[in-house]
Length: 258
Length: 274
Picture: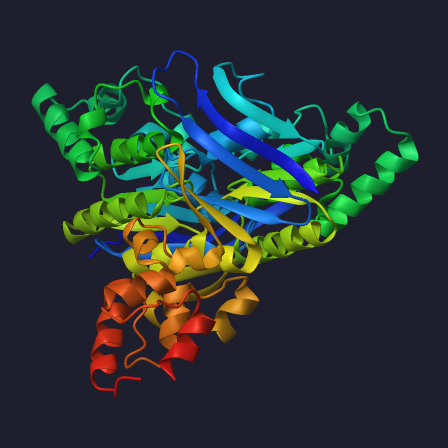
């Protein structure tokens, strides 16, 4: 079932002449994780804002083409400290803020909040004041707050940026699990080495347009390596002058080396 | 030689929440240090102490021969250039150039010296084409580089950077690596907090790992970052390049991309074509 369909979408930020997105067509279906990759400024964050109905509705600008959304979406921005409500004195209340604003009954709010805190391994921090948290802890709180609203379609912009290695691993596993539960996930990440584990499909954006779509194997292509978008393993394989096809991950490299 | 930084039995708490306990280490001129550890291990607290924004509850922070407890942050800025987490939010001037030159100008340097330092810092990070831009007209990644340029322009004995690579793509990370290696070669010491072990392995040489406010490990990164068994209990994971080097048992177990590529090529040449 389609969760999001972009059909020939272009988008211009306010007071800019050249579009940040150019004629992008893309579908994300339920149960699927799609990763957006690209150099800085390629349009991945903009595409998420459009998908979340924040652009142009909230931030202004102009859209051409059509966007069809079937599910209620939640977006995790790359700047968690801008996403906290600032109105909660405990982590539990922060995570409850969204569900409460959806007007859910108290028992349902409590159920969703407890579940989200558990999934992000935040239970020990439930009574902490959000302002006392580290960057990575706050990022997990924001992710929990979005998931507690039970969106059918989840958008993540650099969700692991503030996380340590364990936190990142937990998050990538959780994202796989969300897809397994039937949610659609669209994420932008510069953590290219995590993509083979987490994504079903990769969309390579360049200068606002879709340059290529494929499986994560796309990140072992010569072109991707040369554009700085290969996985670390593929990139070092190419740098060593070894023959194609390049391995995507350490495990692939070990197989090829034998 | 006097260390550029010495922490001597430092403890610090945020109210009832302890952040650092009896932490001691020192950094020599030109050393390149990664400060590693889980979220909440106390890494950013070290930055705040060294910048003079917090005072230790116990112990002392020495910046060269200055006791940081007796120094205001603006005095410490003569020796320590700090870039905080989310530095891209902290620019305030109306052009990148004005922002970068603010630090050296505040040090009371002559205008010619301010200009030279500003030009060098912008040049080192390839920001010269953006010098006249308003910082908030640039993407966050470039604002982050501008904040780093501001710290470089102080030409301090020690650069303290909190997560300098968040939000940067591979090309910009390489640019930061290049600039930091140049400064280090000129004698500047680096203390860099990072979760990005790929960047740490490329740029830095010695790793300090904090675990719940304690110093759990202090050794050369080259031996540490490929060692999954030892990293795991500290909440760290080997970066793919180091993991590859270990998995293929490359001679010397290199951990930097260029060295791994070289070893791959060398070993592959000596093997029959599959």
